Length: 181
Image (tube, rainbow, N blue to C red):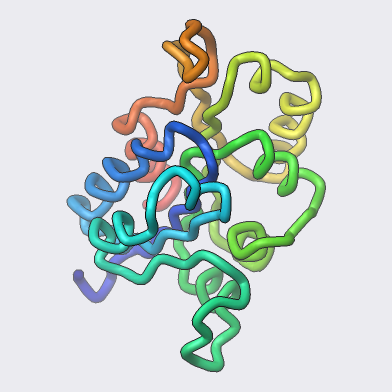
């Protein structure tokens, strides 16, 4: 990577759309971004961290108190190094926690500690996405300066068609470039 490489923290959460995070990492690295993945515990139920480690060529971060190998406070050092925190896929749970200031895992603590822009890409069932509480949480975060890449209409994990599919990777990458450059 070049000396002036931009550093992106990619937060991945427990959504079936997590497999698209692999392509997001590939595309970001092809554009010379450094990517460090922060996984929630729920994300680990869908995909193993080693996949993200190989794709990002960086350590994958999972827990607040795991593998302490330096005296750096991990969530603070990650937050300070970041030029952008991208959360893709973002579940209703992570959106709700961020909206209400609940910082109880590594990803939410990184978001709390960063001064970098935060870009959130929701992915969930259409009933969840359209839920008034979820919409209010999105509105609240937007009013606080968080940015969103809206989900698309498509075939959901339930088999029905509706809004809630993670946005196209190309659209996410375009938004990353717009926010970070």
